[in-house]
Image (tube, rainbow, N blue to C red; front, side, top):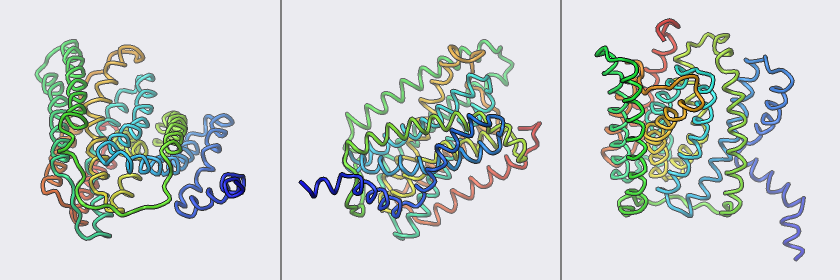
Length: 375
């Protein structure tokens, strides 16, 4: 009884907290969570400071989200774990997009959607190959699962390309809006049936490949779920501060609107998923990394984007379409093609990650140097 009290008493909690801090030094940045909330109350017009503080606050929250999700996925399998991580991680993108949608900033919404798809398929997937390959030389993953996610991305790219193609054929805005609404319903239906296919009727095709490293002393299921809920709420709160400051801060820092939405918002929004994917790759669980990266990208394309189109009829100043500018469509198509090629062999090595990261760097450099008027 005394052992239990020592374990769960104040001193035991402090010891546990110190152990977690030693294992993950990024958790020390949690001090910025109350700092950014108090700063937003005291100085709401300090946009550059709020932008920096919100980024610093999201990083440790992402680490906690990663830690809790890994504990859950260890008990549910990589397929369910990847879906869980992608869903929780995409809450940040959804909150950011909802705030921008309500403000009528449709360019930021579309740039963040396109950027999230490209970031997940190139930066997150490439980073996982690189970090995992540097430690384990050669890793294997379930290429059936990867091909399935790449197929969903191909469908989404086609759906996002059609409204842009129709608009260039001098069709009316009403027709493009009606088409976008119909495509949104189709994409959501396809995504729901895809979840049924991968998690229910054909789940044996998505089993993990290879052996993962053993980790001891992980959190229990109940503890992990509580932490997931609490951290997700804080991420949503900090994301609202981020949205309110990102545009003004970006202008002062010399970043174009396209670069902000496509790169900055996408990277910050995917911080939780990246932490989990990179950690899983280092632990020789490349299946989980690929599932998080491609699963998150397909979820944004087939679920988040269509939901935003439907919600724009309710909370937006006017309905939003799925019409993207040609450069965004081209980058999403090339990212989808790269994901299909990278996942085709079922094996990952560090140089494969370098290639994916190089393509992402080319996109980022182009958007950073793009004149504001052209973005």
